[in-house]
Image (cartoon, rainbow over all chains, first blue to last red; front, side, top):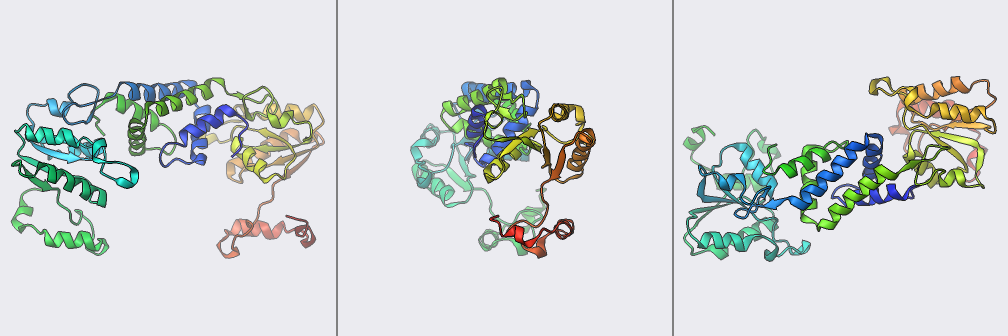
Length: 206
Length: 206
């Protein structure tokens, strides 16, 4: 794609390095910014720089935070003995939105994935194991996505903390609430039958 | 969507103001930038600012350019008497890619669209009419998309330059090369029959 402006070309090249954004979309976005008041571009650029320069990760759970200890870890009314292990900050937000979990989190920052060059060393696993060794943790809930990488990561952590007296659990897999059985994949449907729960349990609210 | 970081929230808000990018995608992009080396964000921000601050529009054709007169207008071997009227810089790039047009362009910067609040005054129509009045232009080729707005814009320009001795033409509408007739819409197929061309013309190369 040859462009009449090197400035435009450079902006398009930079934008198209974002995941899921090709050259064509990048060009559309750049042209959109050129049509808008200059302040919009200035504010976008400033927000990106400021975020990248100043953002911090909570020292306890590694969640994204503006301060040393995030609001969840600093909240005294939450149960520090239950830790939900998640992949990234989006999972924390999703679980927080349910309003049903009152424990703490541990954000791994990814999953073990040799294909993408992500080993255990790049994740916050050591910090999680340290936390368990220090005591006070009763249960770890694995809430990674159930892919090969997620399962590998779960198992890697499980082996590290085995014998430290911590209960480990996994979030329930099954047919989504409101989903039609006929459209569910066999593995999910299979697991939902294998891991069936007493009917009385379904009557307690959620 | 409540976030644990105001810096992240601000960046997501700014990114999601781009067209076609919702809060969820914006969050994915912001988290991607946080995982990448800081230089990537710095370069993206710098490229956006620099583009917005320094970009110029060609004084003759209003194409995006880094200099006062764009490379196409400055090219002496192109036919200045034929002007192709297009909506924006993407159309210039698309036509240039065919390698078949050797005239000049005139970039309108949009289409007349009362719904979107775009009147003739926001487009570069006056400058086009001036160019025609100054003489030297033999033909205007309308290459706007054939929507209600495109047709309105074409007709508005047509009325302004009528009687100035300029030939006006429209790019051919019809079934795309390689397309199946059965999947074409009725209007396109109808036009392609109405505006059929002598078969011998199809034998000349393209």
